[in-house]
Amino acid sequence: MLFDAAVTTALVGSVWLLLFRLRKGAFPASLGKIDLRLPYLFVVAFGIQLILTPLAMMGIVLVKMIFPAAFILSYLILVYAAFRNWHLFGMRVAVLGIAMNFLVVTVNLGHMPADLSLVRKTGRSDLAVAVELGRFPRAKPLTPETRLPFLADILALPRPYPRPCVFSLGDVFITVGACWLILSTMGLLPQSLGTTGHGKAKSA
Image 1 (cartoon, rainbow, N blue to C red):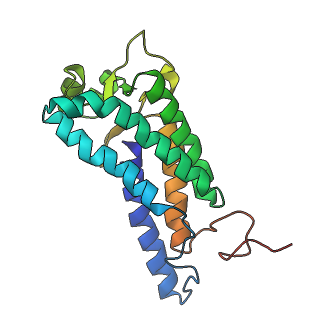
Image 2: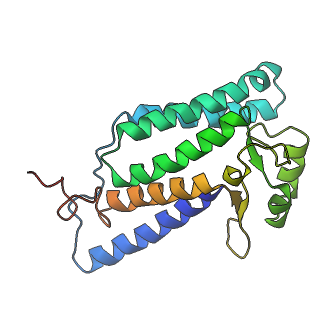
């Protein structure tokens, strides 16, 4: 997934930039500070996916039955939580991607369609087989019957990138927003565009 790959890259890059700034004596005033509202909702949403995905892959019948609805619910929670953090510019970008993924997952009955030929090109033939056999609950093969195929996992980040993956247009917005949040938390970007430096928004 692009989010995983790019956020890892952003973390490494932002740490390098932060160390460079500290070496120059420019300590960011907003380091580690972010006005994130309802953070537990993000934990719940990602927790649903992280916990239920491996359980469904283990073949637990009940989990496999409820997974599509739970997957949709996790995106619905993310959409709500992101809108509650509209004051953060990174979240404004991310919510566009979350909404795109929510839409395509919902109209495809709780699964993200994926172009399996691209999955194989990234070196994940095992994942492609799992999706084909219905063993990976979050995705299903992209077919002519797929709804909103332009929002599916139809983009690829191949090798020589160290973390090759397939991703959706929504993942692009989610990743850009998440990276902006990471960099703003480290004082390298403003948290909102209507700010002076890295502080709070300008008062009227």
